Every structure is written in C-alpha cells, then in structure tokens.
Amino acid sequence: MGTISKIHEMLTSKQVSCKELTESYLRGIESDNTALNAYVCVTGDEALKTAEAVDKKIAAGESIGLLEGVPMALKDNMSTKGVLTTCCSKILTGYKPIYDAAVWELLKAQNAVMLGKTNMDEFAMGSSCETSYFGGAANPVDIDHVAGGSSGGSASAVGGNLAAYTLGSDTGGSIRQPASFCGVVGLKPTYGAVSRYGLIAYGSSLDQIGPITKSVEDAALVFDAIAKPDKRDSTSLGAKEDTYSKLDNDIKGLKIGIAREYIDGVRDDVKEAVLAAAKVYESLGAEIVYFDLPVLKFALPVYYIIACAEASSNLGRYDGIRYGYKTAHYNGTHDMICRTRSEGFGEEVKRRILLGTYVLSAGYYDAYYKKATDLRGTIIRAFNNAFENCDVILAPTVPMTAFEKGHAVSDPIETYLTDICTVPVNIAGLPGVSVPCGFNAKGMPIGMQLIGKSFGEATILNAAYKYQQAAPEKFKDTKWGVKL
Image 1 (cartoon, rainbow, N blue to C red):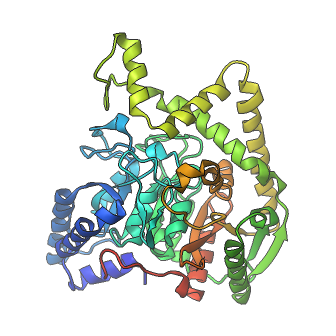
Image 2 (image 1 turned 60 degrees about the vertical axis):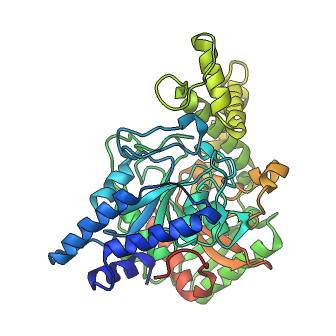
Image 3 (image 1 turned 90 degrees about the vertical axis):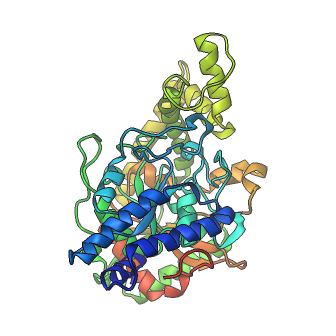
C-alpha cells in the first residue's frame, strides 16, 4: 500500500484526524527542515484550515477522495495565489502571484493540504539544488550529500517524510535526477500531459510538471489527478488514459529495450544495478532487447543550446519594474535594469542567459540554435524507430549516485554530465519514471528510468510497479519526518 492510500485509510477509519496528521507533518518540518532545507516557505495556517474542512466532511459522513486531506508540497516555481513564489532567486524576493498554477487549482479543488513550497536550483537551473538563493537541500539518506536538482527540495521532502508527495518540474531531468539521488520515485510525464499554466518557465518546449512520491502507486494517483487538458496552455492535452487502474497488469511478453549508449560510460555500480533490474524483469516474463541509439551523443549539447536559448527569452521579463527585487542605486532606467539583473540573478542563471543570448544572436543562430533544433528532430525520430522494436526503454537515471555538497562548485562539468541520461526524454517529449534499483557501497541510492512512448505513462508506471513489487528492498525509508 502506498503512502497516499495508507493516509486515506487512516483518515476514513478515523485512526487520525486530518488536523492531527497535518500537525504531525508541520512538527516534522519544524524539527527536521533545519537539517534538510527542503522547504523555503511553510504554509501552516492554510494547511490547517484545509485539514479542518476535511475533518468536517468526514464527521458529516461524507466520502473523501484519495488525495483529499493528504499533506503535500509544491516546488517553488509553481504559482500559488498570495503565497511566496520565488523560484529560489533573489530577483523574485517577496513575489506573491495573483493566481494559482493549473496543477494547484486541480489539487486545491480536491482539498489537498499544501504544507509549503520546496527548495530548488534557482529558476530550475542546476543539478544539485545548490544554486538556490536559500542554500541547497540536503539528501535525506545522508545530509552530507546533495539532494539533486533542480527539484531537490521536493525529493528531499518526500525522502525525508516531510510530505506525502510533492510536485516538481522536469526540463532536463529535474524530477528524475533528484528522485534517483534521494531513493524515491519521480515521474516526468509526456510533454503536454500536464498543464504548464502557472509554472514559471525555464525552457518552454521542455518543461513538464510531475509527481515525486515514495511509491509508484502514489505517482500514478497524483499523475491521474493533474493530467487534465487546459485551454490556458496551448500545448496541454491531458492524459490519454487512467494509469492507477492499470498498475497490476501482467508484463509477461513486454519488450524492454536497453540502448547500449545509455549503459556505456556510466559508473560500474550504476550499470550493475540497472542490469540486475533487467534480470528481475526477465524473471517476470519480460523480454530484454538490446539495440543501438547513436544519436544520444548529441542530446546534451542539443539540450543546453535549446534550454538556454529559451531561458534567455523567458527571463527577459525580470527587470525590477513590475515585481520582485529592484536595485537600490541606479542612474536611469537602463542602468536600473542592468544592475537589478546583475544583482538579482545568480551566477549559473547569468551563465545560461548569456549562452542562450549568444546562440540566438545574428551570425550564430544558424550555426547553433537551428542546428540544435534540426538534431532534435533526428533524436525524436530515433526514439520512434526504437519503439518499433520495444515497448519500454530501460536506462540509468543518472550515471552516478548523489555527490557530496560542494562538488558542483569544484567540478561543474561533471555536474552538467549528470543530465546525460535524462535530457533525451525531454528533447523527445516522452514520459520517463525514475525508480530506486539499488545502492552503492556507501548506501546511497541508485535509480533506473523507464522511458515510454508518447502518452505511454500507463505502460511505464505498470512496469515500474511490477519491479517495486518484485524488489521492495530497493525502496528504503529514512530516519526523518513523519512515520505513519
């Protein structure tokens, strides 16, 4: 039984009131967030109001939904009306949106109990959560290690039992990578399955919102709740089918592909764990198919060119005039905007804005951005061809386990390389789910990802669920937070 179902059973059987449950999570945050730094904003009063409303429904004999009354959190780049939403950047200091993101509208309507907003790399740019203006989130397995990024706070909160589930955003692996590092489940849906309305943009053609949870069952429940079409997002289509009801389908005969390029170059302990997982699938009746996907070598440069180009456009709105941080001393409007951006953006964000502006500039557009978009099409076609011979692709989520704090600063190139296995999924707009599949010699989690066809969430979640049932020892708990 997943965490969400367990909470639902506890609430409906009146083992605990929603208010008592919410208070226990808030106490956990008060006690453990100093060490984990998973939250940058706690909304205790609003959480308790929602909890009391749920308790009134239960007392009146009314039925409640599976997500109703379940304590959760949102990444700090999702708009929440009247609640601080800073993208963990100085430049959005004090910003409180006047509207809710579509995903929060959907969950709020179901009486989800929002505990607060979670830490992240500034504007979702980073792979360790250490570019956050508020300092990085710690890994709940070992707090001397990073939680990953950019949704590091979301993964840390779930792994540290400070939320039943969270929502993160994934532009190049920002849900799956921290999920892998923290030993939890992270689902990046098909591009367009979940509305991006109210998500503060990084790379608009790559961004997608998805759940981070303790179990595959929980991920399916949350995905089904948020994957609805939305007219305010022109790319939004919603999910094609329910995933939760299909979790226990037989996978005998399922063809699971392994691209040799995904395995080459990853650390030995990660490679061994992923191949061991393939053996588990074989024992369940699935067929393992090896194939070549040579275009993967282009994925990382294609991603950084496209993502940075889109970021340079999206972040142009932050000028100190309408909202957020504004420099104290300046001479004229132009100087004010320059100083505000120089002081308000962190170094990594400025680096990516400069790179994006460069590849879009006259004389370099064709050499870089146009070539990257052409190669994107090649990568999409290569995945389509691969799926003619397999139903699901199995790969490492990250070629390594969580690194120690400060490593991203001392070796930034290796930090960029943590995205090498995840970015192809965003480029192609495909769904991918990261699932724990082992541990290294120090006990740090290893994650594998299952990649599906477009709108194939039901297939990859079912395959992930079957693995979770066959290898429950890979899903370990930590010492932090609330114990249900």
